[in-house]
Length: 360
Image (cartoon, rainbow, N blue to C red; front, side, top):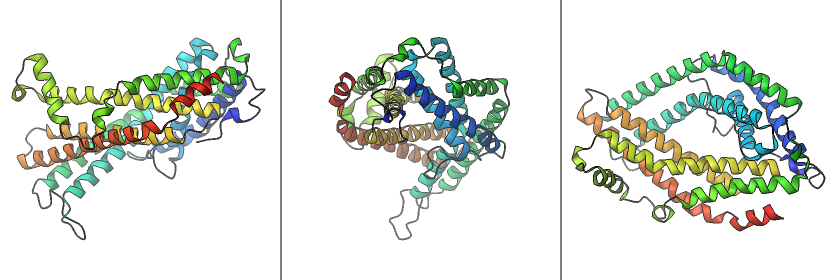
């Protein structure tokens, strides 16, 4: 959590001054990190560091942190800014975020899946052996995953290199340069920060609470719920009149994607609430924990999709397919574990405090 702009002269500062200070600071970080991130991207495939690495992520990580915070601030407090500028800025920042986040995601996914497979196939030196220990399909499954993930990362790397030389990125950099000088604010931003910003931040929390209310938290309260695949497998068959054994892999993928979608939405809203707190100078350690839990949920869900895709590779052996199925189940268990952890952490947040704080 960074020092938030509202901590200084909070009683006299206007909403525009606080928001502008936040935006200009992050825009400056954007411009300082951009050349290093471009250099990292041009080095070699896989050179982009992990955004979630404990020691920081050099240029790319700093750039993505700035992009997320500027975009989050404009989403929550965008009504204080010139609307066309705010909407265009959010669109371009989403584009850059989606572009630069892909390669680090593949790096993390590769590390996650290969580590899971190695653990499952461990022969148990000093520990109990894994359930795939000595299985003949394990080496081939590992080679297949490593090959496909490396190929995907290389393709993404080429796309990133191309886009980082595009006029679109230069236009976004120019937009950030102007933002360092002054944010295009509306007259409403001249009101006191304490009268405007907390109420708008409360809107971000209201959206988060509404999204969490739609989650099946009662079901997720059981750790490693064993009925998940049976539950997901039954619904499409009833609605479509298709027997379970006759459904395609796409039906199963669609059921899992639909099951994961509300959690992905909550993950986005948790990040927006975090960034709103930073602008307002409020602590948010509980939200930091939730953010980390939902990041794990997203990465496990994405890893499971990757394994399911690999298992549909033509002409692989049954032994290889079996190993990939075990790894897929392992990642879906990680998804369930993250949901359970979220259900434990969510009640610890000061829900009533948000409303009191907004009206104070």
